[in-house]
Length: 343
Image 1: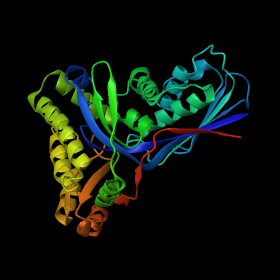
Image 2 (image 1 turned 135 degrees about the vertical axis):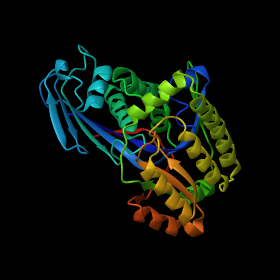
Image 3 (image 1 turned 90 degrees about the horizontal axis):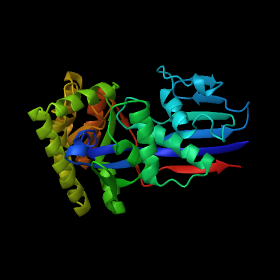
């Protein structure tokens, strides 16, 4: 029996999110600045326990354990569809490697929190299959396979940054074009990365979100060339470039102002990105000393990233708790997808 494992890091997005969502990058080119953090999605793949072709999946997050006796059982019905799509793409029917498989999944953040958890889990699954199949896929190929599984096979709305962040890891400036994606790893000195992490608070707002609906509204608004959406996306791309430059220069204090500017722009992408509860959460944090911040996902809930003056960090954390949220400890993760075998 062979056992392989993988882990892929979750990400926080600083600027440019939304410009990686079609059709904007195909028409104008998108740009995103993000980094990965010390929270992960994990996958374990075991082979050879049951009869040929069977698949057993256990999701620790959803407390689900499901057996699929044959490929025809992999029907999309809202239950573990991401896993089914991954298996369909990575182990097509009739593949010579159709021995039985057991797949165990776990994530440090549930779906709907804005940290890219579903796409990161998809990358972790791709990584486990890469190790199992002994493929030499590059991080670009891993990310594109995950994109194919989630966006094309399943039809889930969204962009590309989550897959690429999980595959590459670290600080990255990403450019998305009509035919290719280019990832620029940023060489951020340790003292700048440490200071930035110390000044940031990653806070769960107490509510999850369903990004598919928000992404669909954004795509429709852009497709209809609604002025506010187009202008906000254009300005967001420019802001991602500015923030990348300030970060490379070590101008940490500019991050708060630019995060706030980006959040004001993001709310113009589509209806439902913010709501009265999120607005009150953010304004309370600002009143306590946060210099800026933004939801790290598509909107509607999940995690919010706040930038603070170091002397006001404790006060902002108390504000978060009084608003019904909680602060999540994290550090910057420099590695992307990792896989290994268990002997």
